[in-house]
Length: 85
View 1 (tube, rainbow, N blue to C red):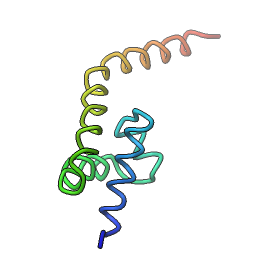
View 2 (view 1 turned 180 degrees about the horizontal axis):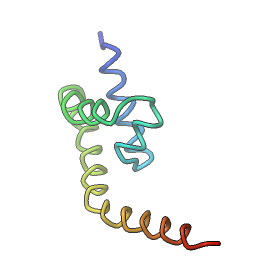
View 3 (view 1 turned 90 degrees about the vertical axis):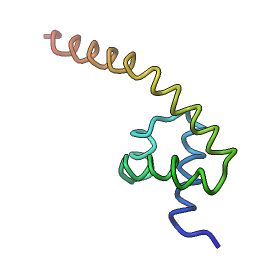
View 4 (view 1 turned 180 degrees about the vertical axis):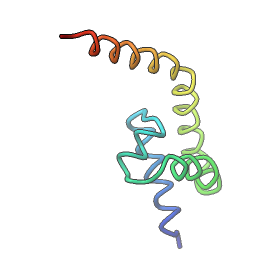
C-alpha cells in the first residue's frame, strides 16, 4: 500500500516529465514547497519507480544546464519593463 507521500512523489514526477517543468513550477502547481518536490523526486521516487526517476533526472539535469539562460531572460525583461514610461 502506498502512502500519500509516495503518491505525491509519483504525481510530481509525472508532472515534471510531461511538462518539462522546473522544481519551482512543479511546487507551485501542486501547492507544496520546493524542498518537498526535490526530496520526493530524488530520494523517494528512486525507491518507488527507477524508470520514472531516470526520466525526471533527465528533465532536472536539462533545467539545471539552462537555468542561467532563464535567469538572464528574466533580468532582461525586468530591465525592459523598468525603462518603459
